[in-house]
Image (cartoon, rainbow, N blue to C red; front, side, top):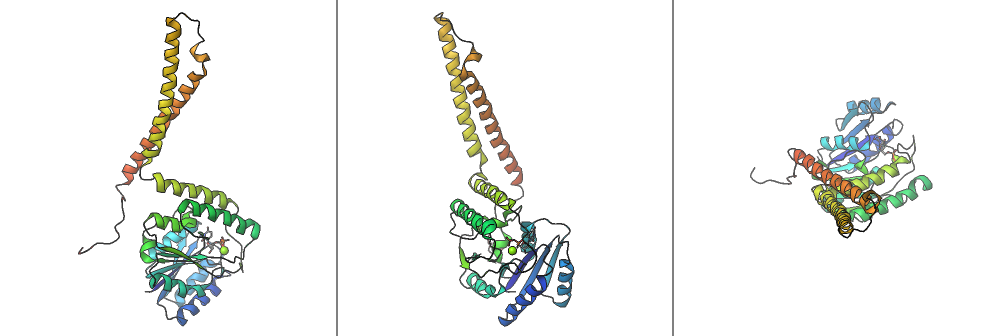
Length: 318
Ligand code: UDP
Ligand code: MG
């Protein structure tokens, strides 16, 4: 099979029939062998009935049903597990992504051997204040952190080699950073392609303004994981020892000055009246805590390593 088209959706009953017909039209006119995987992410409208009807009329339609809303990342994860096509396309269900982009995306991945081709909604039809401007800032931050020269990390329309989607773990709200997840998994042949974008025709956006806060926090998580995820002790242990050392020097200083005053019979303030006492105390406690955090993080990793330490890309004569 050449193509798997993975479509996560939440309450998109009005868009679904139109979207389906449009995709089929594109598939037929290019004679692709394909499957369309709808993932119903806990819709409370008639989306699932519509998908059931489509699945009875066509064997190319596969579907996954979530009983409740788990979020777009979880929906994509389930779709990626099911996908079998050589090239996997993800797109939104709200008709904002144009199915006519699919043949070119397929060509870039299949013939030009890109791991990921990510859509770029250069001309975007969303609200300027609530979406377009914040999204520019957000992409700037993602570019800086990831080192990937993409303008539109979170574009729903993307094409992947099958191997890529099988080897990335999209969870939480990490769908915003799939190119970065892929890069961290060793798939670095990534490019973007300008794609046509439409205004939302039916229904409304499913992501409120909290997505920017969540998005930035997730970005910090990914950055942190890619830098220290494999060896947290390098960060926490190092900082902990440094802090403890500062505390220890402060305590040493208090002790020596106390002895000096006693020895020379000079009147002295109480230890608790000396600010260095509090600095020493605090810094040593924080240092110990940091060190312990690093140690605990290493222990957690050690138990996890039983499950998955590395991903084998290929084997020979197996
Ligand atoms: N979506 C989903 N689960 C969610 C939220 C959204 O499957 O919890 C789907 C939604 O139905 C659409 C796609 O993800 O197909 C993108 O969502 P939306 O169009 O609301 O995002 P926007 O284009 O406004 O960023
Ligand atoms: Mg949309």
